[in-house]
Length: 333
Image 1 (tube, rainbow, N blue to C red):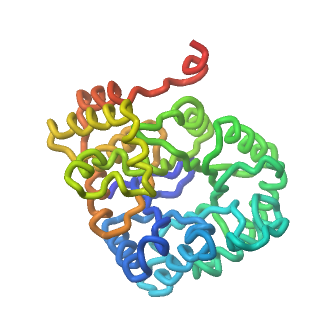
Image 2 (image 1 turned 45 degrees about the vertical axis):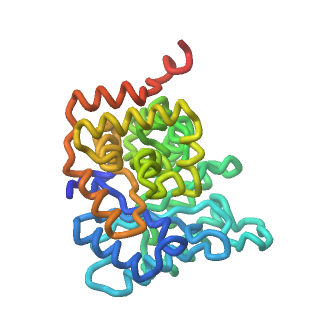
């Protein structure tokens, strides 16, 4: 496994991030534990979760599964860089959304951290991420609350997710005025088929020293051999809630994915592994989040770290999936 610094921090993290979103809804506790054991054995030390994972009336279940894994001991917690997220309301879908039980107010941050620590069976969180921008809470209030949590030893670093470039600038300028560390990472949608983050989010992250953690690196399964699986009857187009099937119904997208898979067939490469390896070549990227439902899927993702893409192949990928380019050129002319 390869390691890198998380943004401008001294924290060393693996270049693949184990996403746990499927733990609970798709993968039972025993299999989830097996995946985490296999990831740690392979050198993956960066695990990502969120307080809302488990979804619906089972919100928090994923954190509980991670916590029960930590409880087994064996140095599991000590070896793991743990990231979780806060923003969404933690009440059941059918219940009333009570005021101050969501978003990023100082009150909810205090409440949510304590609840996550209990579910995760730990006394600190390495990276506490804001799952969405809060348009109603000023950054000075957020950083005041974060500073208290850091002083209490409950969290070590703060990161963002799904923030625009100007949100990152606004957040870190506010932090600088307070003498606070500010955001050290941004978790965003970024992959071969969805490159809008290159316009402003990634440049802002690089400028402010944030590590970029792409989510959905296979774009809902579309970059994981969706057309091939459809042809083979393997259910590729039925995965991810039908997102692949819906996308492939668009003739332009289907043609693009077919060109992608045909290209990789010529090179004898697997689409999913190439999609991950491509992200590892991108400036500013710490590591993509992989969300395996099985140990086998994890093993496939691990192979991407060892995969070297030639300059010729990278150029061909750019031809199939052209980037947006930086701003202002990307939207000005």
